[in-house]
Image (cartoon, rainbow, N blue to C red; front, side, top):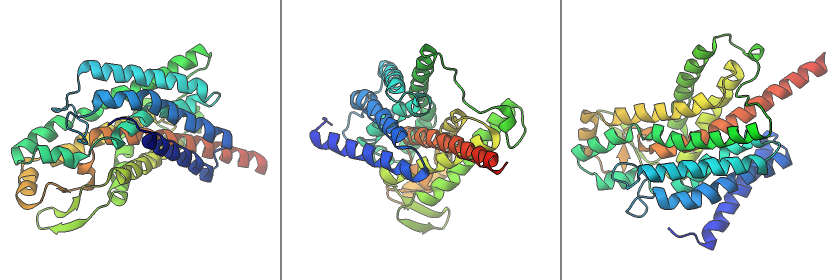
Length: 329
């Protein structure tokens, strides 16, 4: 998994295209440059270095703590890299650092995800029903572990903001709430709503070959990583937009909801009856739901990107809405 000129050029091309695409939603040219810088810094610091730490011993196999060779030291180093990447991205993207720098850490993890394998690669190593049971039981909590790396990135942004004398504002003023709930209840509602919205959206957008099954209704083939990225980013972007606009809740509970969603989707698939049925009747490449083919690191990584983008879009939409109201008055 060495870094070649071809890989660097492809990565740069993706960053340029992603930055250019933001122009369609009204993001200014300079903010698109800052967005691209944040992605590039995250990939260069966390992605290139972290890949060697998190990759599975067997090439092109999905990243997991379950027999994946990842140690506590590896996780700590990746967290430190995420902190450094976000800290540097804050100043590179200044004055839009608070908005753009949180993308650095998930961008680095996204690079690692695209350079590794998927859920099918792990199933191939754990083909029997009992092995799959052990695998999915271990995977259920991994989303929360990988959240620690993303959280370290956010901490880097917070420290940078402190050094520049800026206050961290994760949500607008309470008077801008569309629905009036206390803070704790708003966060709880946001987590549940984000998980439901994302699950529904992923179910629509994450598609592969599908066949009928007497017991489960349908089964679906392993969804490609690129389509997983698209489905999860869009799903959590919609969720983040909704909870920010309606509840004035930041993207943090939305990202947390990704780990919760991953936990419950894998818990469903870890059901002994479902696993036995799938092992007996279908090849390893098939799953009862598309969301069951998404690795925890894939879920939280792409959810973090979508949540930050959705939050930015909601804030911009609110600003435009307020500007229109002033003009009408």
